[in-house]
Each structure stands twice: as structure tokens, then as C-alpha cells.
Length: 221
Image (tube, rainbow, N blue to C red; front, top):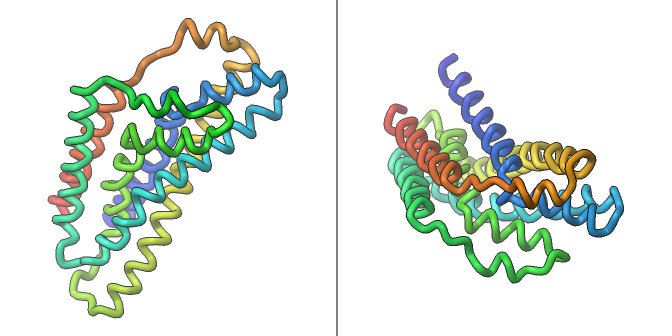
């Protein structure tokens, strides 16, 4: 029962982090509004949101898939989870200290939204935020497995990485899409440019919080 609740809580965190990413302007929903307003076509918005989703999904997968290999090393499963959590905490602290945005993002043309989304997610540590949650979902119940079982676990973990990235991206796209539609239909780009809100500090603190949760859950398991 307790294990089921833990898994449910971790999946809930995956979805909530996706919603949070979607609400964060740094993940790109204002670009979807801009695309629709500039092209004066309603269809430009879902097209832009789809490109942002593809880039975000690929970025999440790029970060999570290597950890699917590490998670198969069941002997050091707890240590890997703790190390991943510490890494996320350190990156959050780094973002608190360094407030400058990567200049490369400003050089990417609007026509390459998927590439922009991919690099933005990497630069902001969006994939790293998922690592402690993903490793918690992949934690094996039996740490005495043989080589064959570990190979099976690795394959299953790779599939889980895709699922985590996919569910997270769907939640992100839904949240960002709702904000984009509201902004496009009622408020417009001029309002957006005047009221743009900065979540850099909140983002960095959320990384620290998720990393600390990952360390705690690994140490308590």
C-alpha cells in the first residue's frame, strides 16, 4: 500500500512539474501567442505549441535515458538517486547565483521553435528536475537480481523514461496552451509585453526543492 502511494505521489509530481513548466513563460508559451498574432491565423498557435512540445520532449528524453542505464546498477541504486538529487540542488543554487540567460536562445529564429524549446529546457534544467522523480519510479523492489534481470530492468527503465517525458510534456503543453489561448483571445501581445513576469527565482528554488525531495526519498527507502 505504501509503495503504491509513493508511486502515485511520484507520478503526481511528474504531472505537476509539467503543469508548472507549462505556466512558466521561459518554456515558450508566449512564442505560441506571438506566432498566432504575427501570422493572424488561429492554426499558427497549435502548430507552435506542437513544435515547443516536440523540443521539450526530446530534451527530457535526452536527460532521462542515460539515467535508465544507471538505474540498472541496482547495487548502487540509492547512491545514484542521492547523487542525482544533489546534482539538481546544485544546479538550482547555480541558477540563483547566475541570473543571465544563455545568449544562444536569442539567436534562434522563430521558425525553429522545436530547437529553441529543446535548448531552453536544457539551459533551465527542466530535464534535471525530472531525474529524482524518475529514479524513484524506477527503484527496484529486489536488489539481489542477477545480470539477466538487470538487463530486463534496464529495458523497462528506458520505456519508463519515455513515459515520464511524455506525460510531463503533455501536462506542460496543456498548461501552456491554456495560457496561450487566454492571452491570444482576450489580452493580446501588447498586454503580454507589459505584464511579462519573471519566474527565475521560483524556478531555481523549485529545482532545489525537487532535488532535496529526491535525496530524502532515496535516503528513506
